[in-house]
Length: 339
Image (cartoon, rainbow, N blue to C red; front, side, top):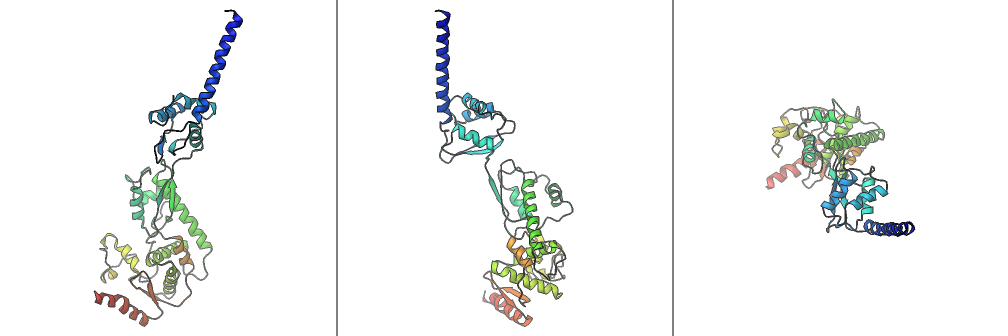
């Protein structure tokens, strides 16, 4: 075969190979991953290469073709150094091309953790320690002082300082990072509520308002009653009356609380016993909601000074002590006699 003929022979082979590669590439990038119903979770660890990711896709049965194709795809797209680590959800209908876009854009799986309104700091830590997918760093060294230091705030009591909300996070997130977000969000909401507060309130600073909001949170099951309860407590503060709220006593008892508040418990003096001490307790008693924060800073303008639980989640409010005694007789003593 002449040199010219040999040249055209190899040229035809190269062109045929190029056409074949183009067809195979086009077929590959649009081939669906082998994903079972309900999708698949695929983890890309830090430092993973395009080679190792391609091999992982093949080994886990998502790719049935040569894993080299996925590596070549990342090369042709110029994305070998742009892939982000994390946990990814692969739904049915995913192609190699759409998956590459997903891992380049860092669209990792988002898990969630919810802080419930009215939780104490102890309940919060117990909950986050038992939340899956979080990187747990608090179990070995999780004292309140250490936690606040790691968040970046020393000499701050943690109770009430974390905003009740749902927080979304990736599998690489630490418990500290979630707590820091919750702390900062409470700081933001408290500052905003304080700046927009009603006039003539008896608080010296936003922290006292936060403490009041925590009491309102624990005293009220009905949203409509929160500003009314706040109004009662604020008027009592102004009149130098003891607040006499059961939730503060219960908080002060801690593990000594048996589940039922007895008359003797009301006489056990603690920094949180508002039956034995005047003013607000020394710290909040729980994590208040935004609605309780608002109520603490926008109280009802009525003249009631007392309230007693009716037993159905609502309260009976009274202006005079005589009416309050009647309410106690009706809703507390009368109820006990019926049992």
